[in-house]
Image (tube, rainbow, N blue to C red):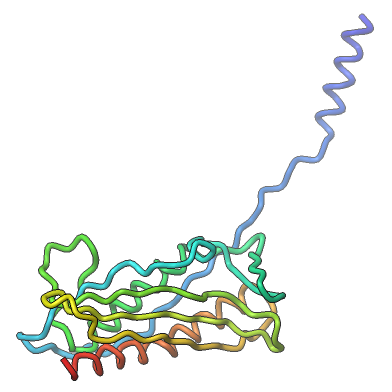
Amino acid sequence: MLLAGGLALALAACSVLPRSEPVIIDRYTLDMPAWRAQAADVDAPVLLVTRPLARVELDTPRMAYREQDYQLQYFARSRWVDTPAQLLLPGLVEALEASGMFVAVVRVGSAAQPDLRLDVELLEFSQDFRVAPSEFQLRLRLQLVDLETRAVLASHLFSTRAVAPERSPRGVAVAANTAWQALLPELVAFCADSLAGR
């Protein structure tokens, strides 16, 4: 009897314990600017854009930031909708397609026979809180390869920063979008200059 009463009290106590609240994750993305498409010549090359490579600590949807040298941290309840490398790819492909430099811009897995390959390496994609106001840092390395000769036509390191409007994950997302949209025309110009010397 005592055992049954104790069990009833224990069950009653369990029922009044607070229920754990679901963790809400805010998700952010990169928006692509609208590009005015230019027609390509029929003899323009086909470009293969490979999936951007990223350092291990950046190959995650977690939103990274720096408050101290040599230390990368992540926001607890905020994420990108995909890894940064995957977020960069659609905008880059669309910008190159609209440039009119290529008869087609394809991704890995396409049946098309490409003439050129664009390799992208993501080196930095994080918010820097070591400066005030904080800034989003974006660094990429691009390499354009002629697939017929296997020669590297050009290689370049790109870097940009954009000030965040507020000290929050949303501010980081706004700054990241600003940085990416500012850098895209430079990447297109890099390809154009590389083709001009081909």
